[in-house]
Length: 467
Image 1 (spheres, rainbow, N blue to C red):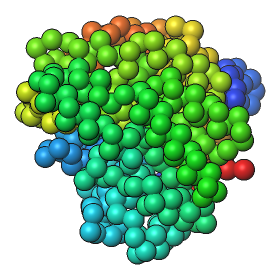
Image 2: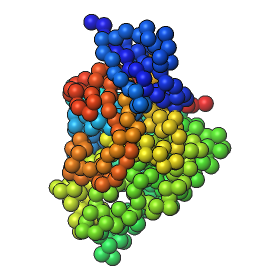
Image 3: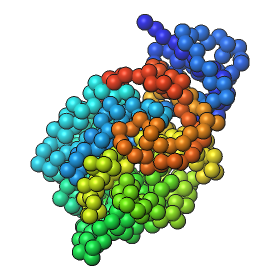
Image 4: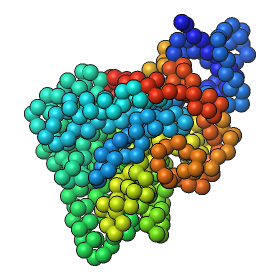
């Protein structure tokens, strides 16, 4: 059965345009746009009409960095693919790219199959996978080629977490050389984990056990050093590089320098680094544990460099690194030893609203909001123009967004499966009203109308920015 929906009267905002237009959706895809109140728009006929008068009509967000059900520190991220993708939809995100994990001693395929089994039939919105490469060997390198062919076109490596995900420089170089050949994109967690482990050991020996010391030992200079090293290894390999969760002024400077040299180097930051700081890590009574993530939160003065990087395009993407652990029963595993606090915080539901607030605060423009949250992540990871824009032929992943609605962020009202909000009590203006995923209403006038299993696995092409 053919189905048609028309969204009338809204301001359509994409990364390149703003236009008062009606949007015609047919069989899950954008069929046409026409300026509102014109003869062409009036000719649109549909089974369902959505009134977007006074609202924005924007592409569904693309969150290219989430960790649903991630095993970490003896526990698992508290959001399942079902709860996490439902929360994403509530926040105006219609595609996530999560991370499948290769366990040391196992193949990439085993890891990918495990994550497919977790996600299949449970997601409210569409999803894809990156592959975490924990064990670089000749078989792994061959598997990378096969994964690229089937739409897993990005591979994450870690310069942090020795004994868990860590790769040494030789392993990183080999994987980068392979990606230079097969078109894959290496994503790098850039922190000097070997040096950090020394500082952790020394801090604990001094009795410095509170959450705030997590930020103090993971020094900005060690993020910058690793970022520099990753860039130069990628340059030697002739490979592109995407640095995840950039948090520090010094790391932004390394990316800026590389891009000024014309290298295919890209950077992502996250809302927590733009809106939170070491002040949160220092909250008393172990409350700071809620804000333990890696890279860590930085002093507030780093935020200006991140916003500037987003404006100058030295940082291209804002993702969440959504990796929630409950304060009670998970974060408190690290009472008396900050190194045992599970690393990660919730945010998949908050990203689009926080970035809209950044528009109102004058940090970025409306179109830049859509660019860094929708279009660029879709291009970066081979999903554009199927995702990330509103144009004929694109999937009808569309959000009707009320730019005037006010809300207070709170664990009492969010939909993430976690017992606290990293933004508890924060007042923002702007809120999702209705969300369509491939033309199907997932959120309708602030009511959840989606279902587990609507979301489908989405293979990706290679990065669309490579010169």
